[in-house]
Length: 392
Image (cartoon, rainbow, N blue to C red; front, side):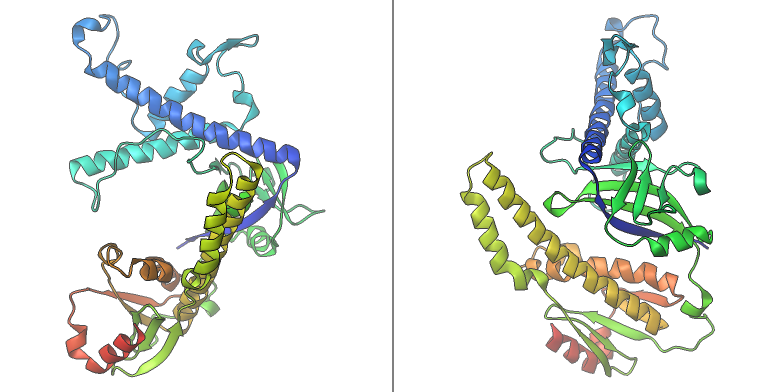
């Protein structure tokens, strides 16, 4: 059974490559908006009376593109038509050859998934809050990212990592070889031994305008030396999450085994974050100083996020490796986030910790049990309840 993981690297593009990255970001946003425009136009034409429609149009022509494949076909037909423009080369989108065509297709796939989620919510087939109808993306507020699909395999793959002369590079279609800051040795070793395959590459901008590439990898299971066998007799270990103390581990008798303190990065860096926010608000709109202040504030938010994610990844991996059976309580985090403790709960990232622990337990062969939130654990183990209350 394979597993999916992600390798993320910081890109160090040249000036020409950075301009090409920005063109790809704009192309992805343009394709999403154009596909959404095709959908809304088709819906508007469908609502018109039959008398106003042409008699010779077929039902296939009046079909609303809704699925991913329909949106890809509709956009491909539009970008080659006169509706997209006409120049010396002929009809069609004049700049479509300047970017990788997969950017258009993946943007249509994103819109198709959003429309599918909207339909499922309307039909009651989707749990939780009903998704809204997709909206057009704005350049100022949309996420600066695009996705590329890996075609081929081995040396003929469209997305490759490392070369003979230079190891710290990532080759992307239409962009060429882009230098990266981090070492790619671990991923290159997995690819060389046929223990991994790159599926997608998502390029995005992070804090301070830095470019990052996230490679979605389908990897082989971990080696047996790093996994636990299901036959091992292990006693369950309960994990109770708190705020000041991030988690308290206890055995079946209620004895405390370990106490994990929370780094609380937002609480610790909140004074500096407030100073930078006030400095940003004092800068004149549209000025260069305001752009610099916005970058400083963005880097601070990124630093807080990095501290939190590093803490969660380290401890979730360690718990999945050292314990064979873990028990964690299912919490109504969406309800708790509406209380006065919302900032502290968001700073602790309880939901992300549960997600990381779930898939890492499957990686390392551990068993994870999610206890129902209405289970009367306090009545059954009063000692552990008092310990958890002190930790919160």
